[in-house]
Image (cartoon, helix red, strand yellow):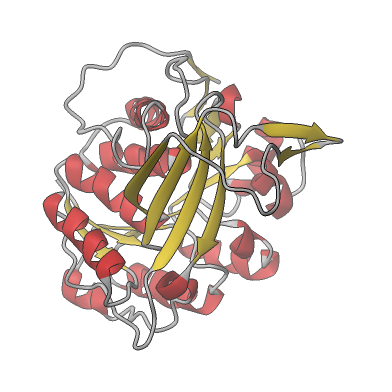
Length: 320
């Protein structure tokens, strides 16, 4: 097994679950929340307290797969931060590199979840996960990881550069799943990609980074910057290449979606967890898809994360 560092956000997720008050209503090309009157009191069906954030979601995927996993990120010294560390400790994730910025509270997300569609609206106060410039890339010298897995750092390109260059200098491979704030910094992002081994983006994000509309076209252009590229298209599946093999594939299984929170994290970290365990590129894509499917079938971003020991059934995947 490998030693993997997960770098990213840590949040407490508070779920407000209801079957009829958080319904989306079409307004032109967008869908907006309806059925809540200003000044009213709304009864909901259920409340859940979970741990979220791209960094912690990914860390749990790696740990459940049997990898030695270290989480690097920020939390406050408060009950929410304590809850996050307890969950990670229980999952076998090393929390000794978590930083507690002074006078800063742990970030919190309130998830308004519609049980009929599985769609959610998220209200987030990022707190300690709003900034990452206090994190020290020299921690990688002590950890000596095989892989650095990075989710969005809220557009902090300088911190990303520091960690990517350090990883490259010590022979650590990098998988990167940027967010919208990194993609908005297109020129800087393209510069970062020279130290990235695997890039994970969705179709819209890919089209914002390189020219093109067709998936094959976007994949070819991104492959000029990164050896391995995965472009997801939601319910339409994904396309991926490692420079030697290219695959187009659909969803793993058509399940009742309860909650889409953490689906992208589950796919990316599930893929790397399987790949770092010595499995093939193709099988790792299948496992990432299965991991994502399992996560959306349960409430919260972690309950459905797989362990790597499950018997997986075949799925639509084609070499092109």
